[in-house]
Image (cartoon, rainbow, N blue to C red):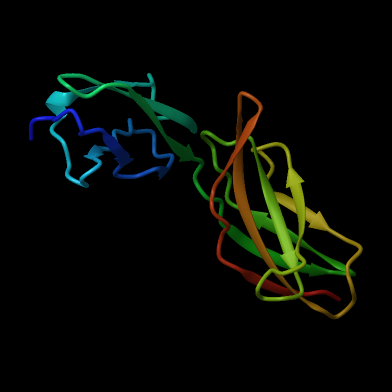
Length: 175
């Protein structure tokens, strides 16, 4: 499609805006649409990609238009850390001990959340700041109550925290 004087860019989209870290370079595809909603050919723009694009963090694509189209658009995608998985919950007096598998790469620490409601409403969050730690004792809870527990990984990059999704829920009843 040849651009007319009335044709301008309406939208730029990436095929995917969130990834989970797997050590491989990410290259989401780009689609550019004009104001009529038609996709335009890549001969009307150039793409400058952030270097790296494989570690946890936020990455930028700068699209510069040419051949009758003018301007620039910037789009971003994010790579989040791998999820941690709870391996066991041991009940204790007024609390429990959570154990999980270590995420060895691209992780700074973990967050554990627990709640007496399966929806995780009114949950409390405990942060474990060392990625090498694989257990945490949670205390000062109510006796003989059922708690739902989840865990997620985080990675800090340039003072910004990136989080994995929460793990599946496990339950424990305190003593």
